[in-house]
Image (cartoon, rainbow, N blue to C red; front, side, top):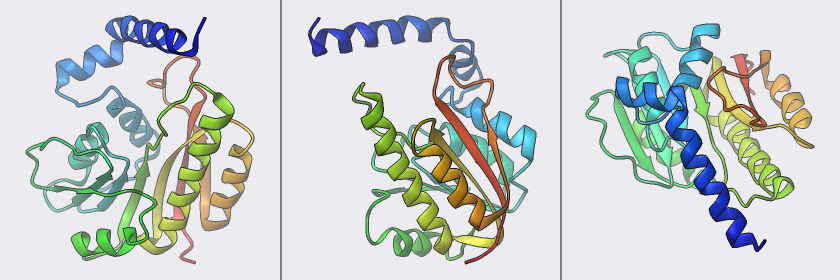
Length: 212
């Protein structure tokens, strides 16, 4: 079977599975942009990272599901800034700002701080590469994204702040855990129930940034 045929077959299977996915159906019912909203809800339910009035940065925010959940958590006195290379359709929420920007842009920190006027209490990242179907390649690209988020956290996160970052299980995931543990006093691996069955993803939940 040719690669293009495998990709088409995989996409059709994914569409069929989505129609039966309880989190996809729940997101449609409750008005969330993505089933991924429930991953963040479950993370926050377990660790209570975001408080009213917090400043939150969501890196890789499209289509906006995590923005909606973070907006609820910070309330009217907080601010959520979402960054993505894809444009996010207006959510109609006054405590959200979005920026069209690549995570690898050299001016990332300056551009984000121009909007926030302040460092962040929490950084969120649900970043994934465009999937090639070759796991080793997809894993390497995703780990590169995670390393970039860790680098950015040094400049954008307040001392004592928290971070949630998606990681693909594989050769580089232990290295990521060690690097995050050097920067935070508390680090846990967490896999939400909303993660798809068989998915290699997990989330690192990190609290109490040391402020390097």
